[in-house]
Amino acid sequence: MVDTQNKLSIVKQCRLLEIHRGGLYYKAKQESLENLKIMQLLDQQYFNTPFYGCRKLTFWLKDLGFKVNR
Image (cartoon, rainbow, N blue to C red):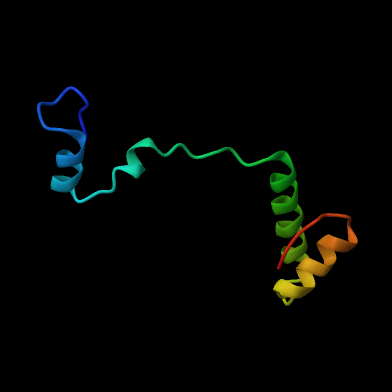
């Protein structure tokens, strides 16, 4: 898509492609081990109790000792 060796500047290339320049430099971070553990627990709990909503799942995680927000 965007070529740094091109005669056109990166700004002009991004305008032509209608993309934001910040997206070129964005590098996604890996999930932390704690987040992966929380997601795994949520998957298991949701499988067991699909009727639990956001609030009940948040309270459940807090009871397990995790610091989470709603």
